[in-house]
Length: 290
Image 1 (cartoon, rainbow, N blue to C red):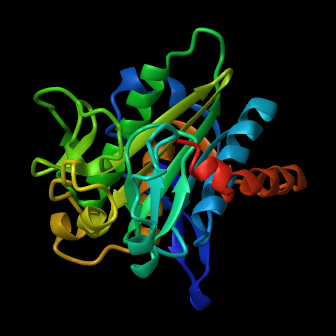
Image 2: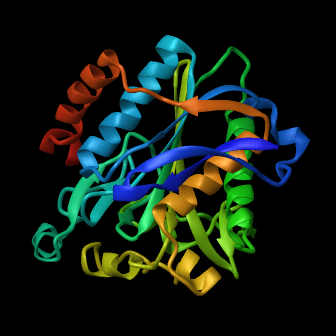
């Protein structure tokens, strides 16, 4: 099967090339949301507010155009992202975060706190029809993530949780792997969060290249459970893994599952929507809303 993958060209730019890839490992039962037309977007490092703004704008674009987009991105500096309803005011040690060079942003999605540093973030935005199941979308996206990780050589698998999931509070996303999340050797490898708003969906998440999550113990309250040792691509493969390698594996997995994908060109409306959303995500009113 021919799919388009990202390669690192001369000068450090990412370009697409067509290559033959292995058949999809995504179960046919999970492929329904994945078939059809997709756009892919790989963006350079941005601030936390800029990254959340672009995901927000892509969700609005999905509602407006019906297009589905797989985006792959990184962050311009270490950034602590909080779930939509996590407590921040009086719970985050801002002075320590600043001293460590860690920026703070609040996501539009729920879930728990996550440190973005040596990792790759993905996002999926899509239009939802009446009757579409968010659970089916979550399962389909997870199947793509698993297939991509297997293509990299990672023996990843869905996690099986034991006991109750902690409430968000200010806890770390990697305090445990919940049912269905992706793990390696019993350690959580991918942390994801999902938002459905009317007829559009946003799911984004972090694939760890290396483990920096322990740094959160110095920023989050002492009464929060410390994050468990996380699974990382470096741990799984015994080597450094590049962003373009992960992006290529994700695009290959999506194409092999039946998606007709091509690169997204950022249009004027997307730029305007992103700018408007960035003013929200960079504001203290949003960041410290709880």
